[in-house]
Amino acid sequence: GAMLRIGTRGGLKTVAATPDGFAVDMGPWGFIDGDRARERGSDAVVTAQGLKVPRPGVSITMGNPHTVVALAEGEKLDHLQLWTQPEVSPTPPDGTNVEFVVPADDEGDGIGRLRMRVHERGVGETLACGTGACAAVVIGISQGKLKERVTVTLPGGKLTIAWKGPGQPVYMTGPAEHVFDGQIEL
Image (cartoon, rainbow, N blue to C red; front, side, top):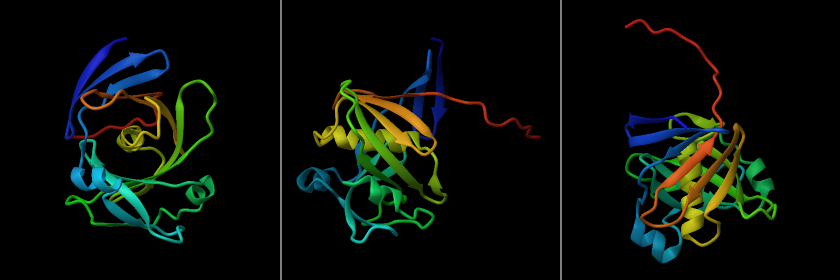
């Protein structure tokens, strides 16, 4: 399909039209505290309302900071109270979005699945976060827990994230819907 390059604060992104929506090359990513994350499997401790005990997290940047927390059960994900900002220790220098993920049932089609909820810094819980979905999948794949292609289900819909490993681009695909018209006077 048609391609468009868009300049963002996170770098240049290439967007391509697909039959099901759009695909975006999300650009480079990196660990915020790579040595600690690789040595321990986590580099942060996250406390959130709705969790009885703090959980380990991994902080990465996708052009913006994310801390990903894996949960074992969907019930824990459903009971999070994300209108309150989770506490992340140590907090990355520019703050962080916090993604909570839980594996979803495998449908036998070779595609991994995650359910996810996100608290965006300065905003609260949001229905979707593309860079957060990418962050969650990159962490899962780098830890050997996910396949190279993953469907992430968020309250606002589904995204498919694909990443083949270090040095390779992270691709996000999904639908787009027109939700608003407006005018701005300059």
